[in-house]
Length: 165
Image (spheres, rainbow, N blue to C red):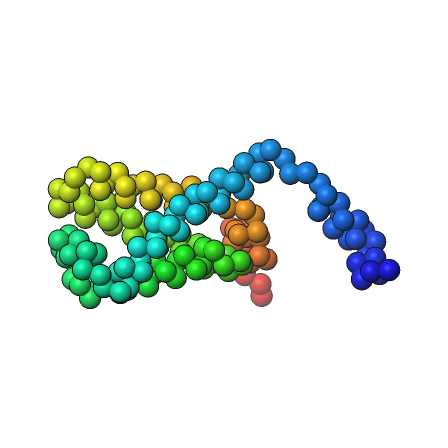
């Protein structure tokens, strides 16, 4: 008799059927879509290694946009930490921050490229990375969402405004 049967026969039944139950087509497509968009996003963010190392090409490009060179390591470190947060299991709140950081970084990059009158392709690439960020965020499985980890849910307005005496 295994430990699941001793603790709860109902739990043992749910666990044994969950592993043999076929995934629905929609759920499987969502999972594939999540990992494809997340993989592409992670690939795009690996440029943070070059920023972290202060490579001349990234340094020259950032300075041409009007940013100081000392911001490069911070941007690079942020991208590397975002990659780790997105790929590491758990840590749903950190994942939310990583998605937000990537999105705002790309939003700032779009504005910078437009302001410097860069070629259209640079704006298209940056908008595409921002779209990948949103797609990965929207397609993430329930286990990688903030509410799935037992985080406190938002209370209703009545609960938040009422005070106990």
